[in-house]
Length: 182
Image (tube, rainbow, N blue to C red):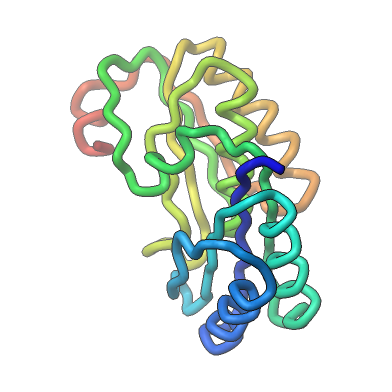
């Protein structure tokens, strides 16, 4: 089996903490992040072998379905997702900037994986519901054509689950803007 990540997003903190406990008791997974995000929701991001991650996420979803907002399991996630989650990506040059915003925390990670696997783009940052009233966004860069392709493919996929909010593409963003984003 391959490496995977998974996430569940709950309406309440108490359910989220119970879900995290359920996940680690269900399968051999590691908790990458378990925390409160705006507006008082709780997210748990786990990693491990694909079958273990799937079992842990499924157990959590089954047991606490009534408080579940969103979830995912990604086998072989794009390696740039991890540095983007922590805002640790170093970008040298910017030809275009893509921004995609979602209504849920889980859907932005799926969006980032789709974008990174669709075109030659670099994930700059994934802002996961922190200080955003539960919304999330990603910043990507690359050529105008690559950023456009990645945003369009991602937008189509996220629209299917109802979590797409908005997107924009800026060719050659001004240096002053760029410095404020980093």
